[in-house]
Image 1 (cartoon, rainbow, N blue to C red):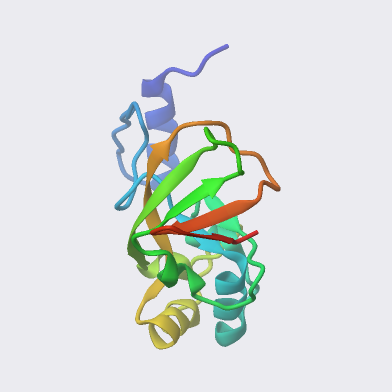
Image 2 (image 1 turned 135 degrees about the vertical axis):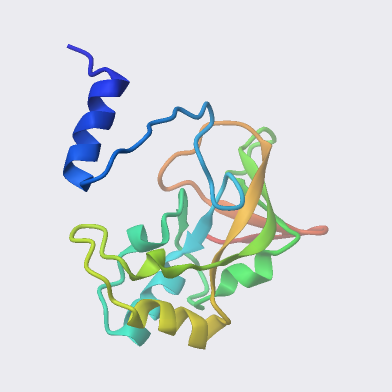
Length: 161
């Protein structure tokens, strides 16, 4: 039996303690761009600096990348480049457009919602409040877990994963 939006809004409002309004957005809602990649080394380093579990969900990426060269905040080097997911001519690809300036949402544990402000402090101290990057889709195709990711900066092509 489907849940009506009005019923859902009433239930969420009751739990929240205040009325809420529900809305449906055709393509979702994003901070600054539709694609938000982050490297696992960046997440690990922030976790280490903050003495917290390095949970990638704190950063809400829709692409997590494992790097061949283990260097935190390596994503900053991707600016102006393009990530392609696979070697095929029609492999999915994204243009990296800007650094991801973080807000206090990274402080919240995704399971408990408990705040750990040391996470944000670690991001600020380690990389001027940036962790990950934003991108724009340049070639649409299916992404798969475990795909090799290539960085193309000008005529150069390097492997990320």
